Amino acid sequence: MEKLLLIGTNTRSMLNSALKLDYDIFSTSYFSTSDTPQLTNQKIILEEKDNESCGNFEDNFNSSTILEISKDYIDEVDHIIPISGISPNEFSKKNQKKILGNKNIENIEDKHEFYQKIKDEFNTPETFLIKDVDEAIEISKNKPEVKYIIKPVKGSGGYDINLLNNDSSFQLNDSKKYILQEYIEGINLSSSILGSRDMKKTIMNSRLLSENDFEKNNAFLYIGNILPLTNESILTNVKDIDEINKKMIKTSEDLAYKFDLIGSNGVDYILNENGQYVIEINPRIQGTFECIEKSLEINMLDAHIKACQNEIIKIPKARYYSYKKIIYSPCRNKYEKINLDNIYDLPHIGSITEKREPLLTIIDRDNDFEKLYKKVENSALIVNKEAKKSQVDAI
Image (cartoon, rainbow, N blue to C red):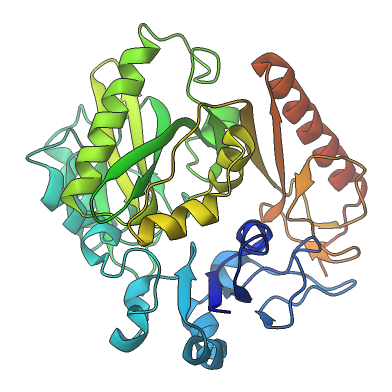
């Protein structure tokens, strides 16, 4: 039996799919959720313990640590699937050959290089490479009518993104490079694509959700997705949802061919009255993974692997709406069991989650969009209420 390694920030959802396939599964991840399947060949960095804090993800996560502790697995397995948090470019040339998916993604992960590659062909926000906040402010003075954001050249999940004002006083991390990007106000959307050597095919479009969709606070942290993309799930009034979907499908597939994307990939957009803007490509399995599985009733990991082997599965029509919502802890809390049937990525009982760190994920599906939306939002209220009941003070 061939050996397959899943490696990244959180492998839970992919493991559930992988265990249905004919592989000997290995896994290395940062997070250790209590609902992660237990394997013989498994390594986890964050060991959650009773009365101990899980810390801050941004401060503690380092992809090189995951790679270091995975050395023996990487040498032993036949195939590797890097998930969010690990770049194929971090593997040696020898081990890149084992990767099922895109191997060289430097010109996609680097947001400035990506902009340079697509700016003449696709509608995309103007982007500048900057040294510091002062340079960003100087550039913005040339177009006072335009809003700008500062974000890392490499990054995902909406972390470390700031809206630029003339009085901005935040500091940039000296260990990272940053871009200044025109801030496009509008609706966040995303396409999920399968790419084989010969064909690129859109699986489904979705409504991409950020913290700003709920808090209206100019925060860009990734919250989740709703799919498929319809008049209901887009969560705002639009003129022609069929045309929006049609244009997203064409643009996503054009980008997939341009960058020769392999396996499961995502393209993120912002839609407003001026059109659809390409924001970035996620050249790996995306956060919509479980939503697509629930909506289409397929095994997305199987679809990804087959695409890497030059076979695109027949993509069925959506049978359900699916909604994923990540709950970030409203306070510093000691986790106690919550009796809901649609929560995942659960902390270990008694472990402490810091305020604004990921607490758990709500994922559900229903034929009726209104019922689904109400159920997920009600679950979110319950989770936040229970978290506040379990609040603990900082030491």
